Length: 165
Ligand code: FES
Image (cartoon, rainbow, N blue to C red):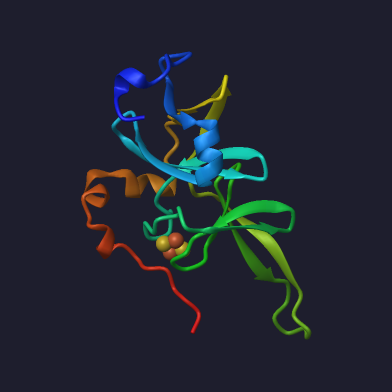
């Protein structure tokens, strides 16, 4: 859609139109500045839609090219920059902890660092997809990268994905 007039009426004032579900399914990932104030990534994966802050809580890396992987039954987007894992439904940072480093072979467990990435609500109405921004007053680490300072940073200046050699 190219103009605001073409957007469907929003079912409620806090819901923001993202696009047609069919187009999002086809694209797999959509990024958008929502309500003029927040850069959001909408992901379609295994018949579900997720929305989260576009920039990674760690150092502002762009998440739209992150792989989606399951870690101990929890679906995560893996930041392309330094491979941090972020759960898609809660925004928790996950890490693999070693139980006891003196015991071989090492035994590891996936643990949570807590809520790190702001997750937003996605609603589908008659084939149209809307996002409701999570306006919780609780500070979340990914908020730092939603400030004007980071929005105006050239994409070239953001952390680059690390490629295996
Ligand atoms: S910027 Fe995402 S893991 Fe570092």
